[in-house]
Length: 156
Image (tube, rainbow, N blue to C red; front, top):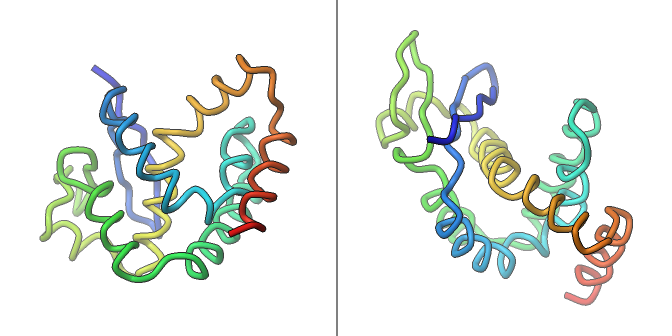
């Protein structure tokens, strides 16, 4: 069993259970069409070593800005519904760990940016590590990835 990853969003603690490999593959196939072109800088930032909290927050801010420029409300809602589920996310509310169902969502999220930040963490948990390992196997560096993604974004 995969151990959930704990993240804090606006003082609320969430536990993200990583996807199994086949679910992640299907999600990544769709994700790379909708979201990844909008957050090219984010992929390079999250694939690097952990520890630079200011850098992570700056990368997230850039990603949110790009998301708002590239994606409409229907797309964002569809991704939130797909990635923020009671089967993959647990939230700590009043000392109890609750599955992220509709009632828990109403209590857990204070602002829409909280939803975007949790989406960022879900994508990071499920895709940053595997992408970094894949890049190292192919011999590509993060600078090459970032340059390639920036070029691709510029063409869109």
